[in-house]
Image (tube, rainbow, N blue to C red; front, side, top):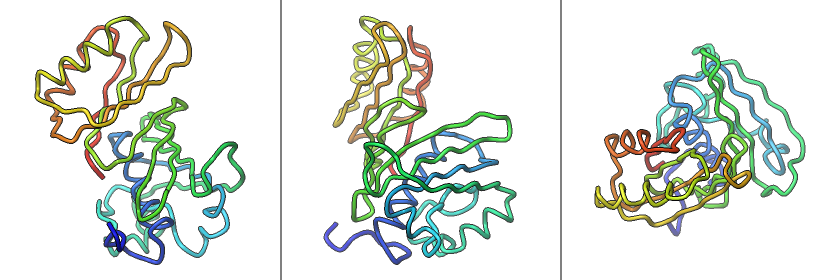
Length: 214
């Protein structure tokens, strides 16, 4: 924690942090990506040509920040047939090191994410598919899309308590009363696929995605 992550250099913010943002996006898509649309803002926009930042958008690059193939990410993506589109510009109310990343699967399913690389390889995911979230990637987490209805939060957290899960971070956002809402729940204990399946079967739940620690 003091020296920074074990990683491919040259920058923990611009390499390790970027890799973890890409890894979270890939995990949320849940399937191989056919296309990656990347928007670089702030210092990313000025430096990405010198230090490749689109790590982990492909299918076969390892999940660790010290994977030597990170420096050849563009070559790996090309061999896998991953189409890449890169743009630069300014994002309003954004951290200086915050890319916007959209991954699209072959069947058209996609996930869009905004996250900040906040130093030392640490990240903070702030938006998923336009919805406000708060995820660090340092703990197992659930992203639960649901109807804003009484008792929904209680149903999810009671089920987590049944499985002995301890919640260490909780964030809720909604677009309007009674509309779409999203819970982001981080835990300092194992979640497991069975818990996620049961959450998906609860009333008022549109989808629940489990995200392992990255």
